[in-house]
Every structure is written in structure tokens, then in C-alpha cells.
Length: 434
Image (cartoon, helix red, strand yellow):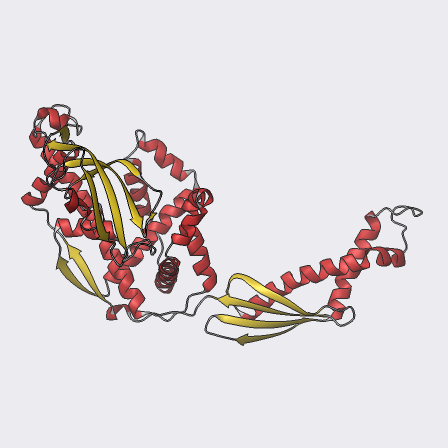
């Protein structure tokens, strides 16, 4: 077998493989002999069919099967011989398969990039730090009160903070946008959930009012058909309601699991939950900053096959949605999705190289503690721990997650790290937007 490999780019290879006719004939003869022992042909006893009859009857089919199998096996052998790590399926084109002339084919494929990491000491990483204040706690309790707000209909013009129920539609060049009218739609004025200016138009409106106004959609609106466009809105006001916040008393805190109604215990529980939220957000933000620094310092070519796999994995949960509403697929920002997928693949390759180059292994103690933390969220933690222990695939997922965290810590221990104070509000906002 003769092999030649051409690099058509950093990660693209073109391989020429030649297999001599002798090897093909040997395999064909072996298969025809095996077939002769099993095949039944009228006029001949089993196992006594002449070779020429077998060859005449089955020779062409067997040769095709041999060619197909040899392409697969020789391609695998060639990869090992050339020490190549392919990504995805190769594009194989037969050049010569004529009987008597052997087999020659071309295989084009991508390979994993060769990565030489920049020194970890050269990475500059921002590490956010956050301390909860009494003000943060009071704001959180205020949010919890907002969640329990009671609404009562009022006979007066709407003002900020009110909830207004409307039926409305938007018209672009006289044609309805979206799915037509939205009926009995509730808006809390001042929430900022609608496009800029919409809620402002409802301030001063009363039950029974009919409003018409034009607004310009933001230039960066997710639907390109509406971005930057002037739209006429027709709105019928059905109801105006005023909200009343509950007092933080024994009855209130019982609704949040404090059965004895102890308000101080409630405050402690809220603060403890906030602390857990802070730690999770800090860990996530720090990890993102580490990965971003790693990405910026180590530009690498990314195999297209891996990008396609990542896009498919990203869109997989939306499969039923697209099946029922195929037009939604055309509204996706595919360029952005592809760029994000490309970055995620690059980061995965870079982090894998950090793990490989430094021979990192998942710490059994951290794996165990991670499983125990997950188990605490269930009624029978011991049963959950046993379930992970008896499911190697699930345990491997935990091990991979722990190993990734260890790699992040490894990088942090060697990079130039600068601590940056961040408020609780900013931390939560960044986490929600990421």
C-alpha cells in the first residue's frame, strides 16, 4: 500500500492511497472460497460448485464489497501510519477501481489542530469579588414582596407601577406583525419588558380607552424584519390595577418555608441563599474570564466538522419547535450561532490541551463531594449517591465537570490575576445577560 499526504491548510489534509491488485485478489479469493462452501446452486451439491461458476455468478458483487471494505480498512491503517487524528467523516473519492489495475482513492478530511499553548503566566485575568451588604438583603426582601404583590382594579388613569391589561396589534406598512392581535396582555408599567416607549404611552390611560401610536423598533431588535422600523400600534385598554405589597410578617415568611413565622430566621435564610447565589455567580464569571483570556492568547484553527456538531447540539432542544413552526428557523441569527459555536469548540480544544499538557486527573475527593452536593437536593441523598456509583456514564459526566474546574484553578494559579470588586446587582445582571 502506498500513501501520500498533502496539507491543503493548517487542519485540512488530502490523502492518496494506492492498494495493489494482488491484495484485492487475495481478499476476493478468500471470500469466494468461503462462499463456495455455503452457497446453493441448482445442479450442484452443496460445497461442490466449481470455482468458475462461483466467480462468474458472484465475482462482481464480491469485488465491490471487497473494494468498499478495503477503503475503510486501509484508510484507518493509513491514519495510524501517518499519525493523523481526523475530525468527522472523510470525503472519499475513488480514482481507480478497474479490475486488474488495483485500487486508488483520495480522502479529504480535517484533523485536530496542533496546539502550542501560550505560557499561562502571560494570561491577564480579572477575578470578580463580591461582598453582600445590608442594602442588598433589603432589596432582595423587597423583590420577594413584589412577587407576592396583590392587584386590585382601580378607576383612575394608569401610572407607573400599575398593571394594565390590554389587547393590541402592531401594523407595519398596514400589515399585522407577528401572529396578529395579542389579547388580554398584562403589562406592569415601568418593568421595561416592552420595546422603548410602549409603556410610556400607557401612562395616563384609563379602562376603555383606545390608543394609537407609532414607535420605532430598536436597530438591534432580534427580528431583522422589524429592526429599525416604524410600527403603528392599536391598543385597547381593558383594565388598570394597582398593586399592594404584603408586610414582612409571620404569615409572609411562612410562605417561604419558615413554618414558625420567625422573621429573623427568614432574613438569615434569604441571606444564605444570596451567599450561595453569589458564590455560584463568581465561579461562573471567573471561569468565563479565564476562558476568554485563554481564547484571546491562543488563536487556533477550528475544524468545521466540530462546529457543525456543536451547532446541532445547540439547536437539538428546539427540534420540536422548528418541526411545528419551520418558519422560525429563518429568523435565527445563524451567523451569530456559528460564531458562538466556533468559539465554544476552540475553548474546548484549548482547555483539553491544558489538561493533557499538565497531566491533570479528576480528584476523587472532589468528585465525591460534588455528587454529595447534588444529592442534598433530593429526599433520599444516599439513594442518589448510589445511583451515580452504579452508573459509570453519569459519574463520568461529573468527573469531566470536576476536571474542567481543576483546569480553571490550575490556570488561575499561574496567571496574572487581578481582583475586581463587583456589586451584587451587577453580578446578577452579568450572569443573566451571559
